Length: 203
Image (cartoon, rainbow, N blue to C red; front, side):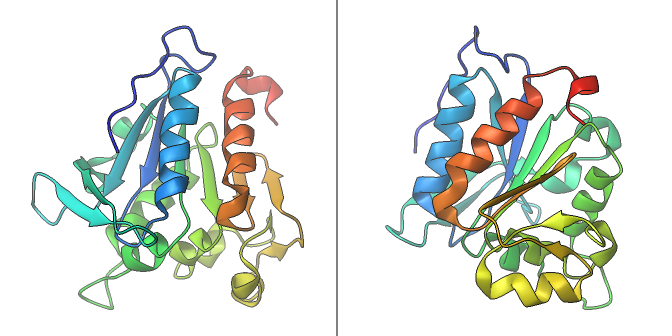
């Protein structure tokens, strides 16, 4: 997957979108996000836990395609997060892998990142398919909020206190969720629509 340059005249020119990454990602989904957001002018940054390395190479689940990632999610403090307009947790096994912690008493860095992100209302948080797995240890982030997810995750979301809706896409202010990877186009379109209008009109 080559680098896609943002279109300078797009509706999202100057905005940055982060996509969390790990192995077993869905190649077509990530490629779609990179092309679609760049078409609208946004810079797409792939983010992961780098474990002290300058970059890591992950492998897709469908075609075993390699993808180099050098964005360090652990470096995103509040100041850095304010440089982003949206964070996306994609489909596949990305969320499950990112919720690993070598010490079960410690919060995984990816979850700490999302806890910070949820404290920034202007930052759109989007979860595709199994992406909400990453919030299992922080159910307060979606408690009483309407969401959708993969059918296999519906009971887990209800146990987390989320209000599961049997829909392909659900939008609740700064939170966007979609049912499966096949609905990634709906998720991307919604994120674009949310970011392309003034913040006061996005409620």
